[in-house]
Length: 221
Ligand SMILES: N[C@@H](CCC(=O)N[C@@H](CS)C(=O)NCC(=O)O)C(=O)O
Image (tube, rainbow, N blue to C red; front, side, top):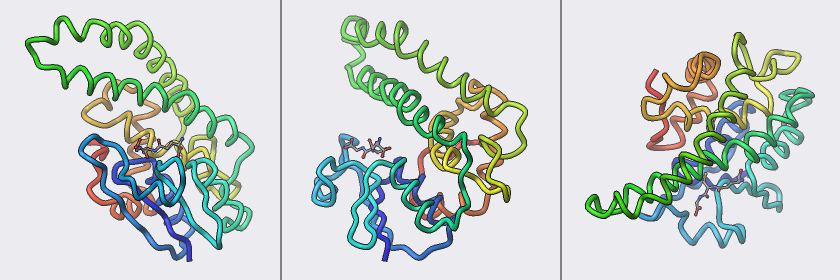
């Protein structure tokens, strides 16, 4: 049986969504993050990188959310869930947008961890990196997504021929949650906002979020 190694509050929500959408049976193994936020060492025993998600199926171990999604859609999707525009968005989301989300998160957490009485001095460099490099790049990357979603009533690249979500959506869902988290929805643009609303009421996505445990990125709409 398929086994998903899922880390709380992580990209493995993408795979939960695909599995729920496909309606196939799977075993879910959920891992808690260490206090540092890192994945626990047990994940390294499953795959050398030790990052979630990791999927096991039929003797294969697949890492990287994009690769896992393609594997599942190809093997179990029955020809559905694809669109010729998926390739760009799959690579763009993980290759260009997510890195800036992660830089922002890591630098902001680093600044917060500096004792307040030292912050004005020690935070100068991380704040400069944020304002001069991370924020402009992140804002630009988010705007590109917003432009793609603006005016759309359905899926990110129009869905498949039957109106189902496609690989671009499976990649985008978790990222939209991260962008919309913590009251930031007001700052992300109309396209992202309305997509986030539709996503949150989509049955298989709702189910995936329920199964993911205590999901911190639940957007307040
Ligand atoms: N590009 C990889 C990223 C994998 C990744 O960084 N996963 C994070 C969770 S979202 C992780 O396992 N973090 C724990 C750690 O860094 O120890 C993918 O798309 O699967």
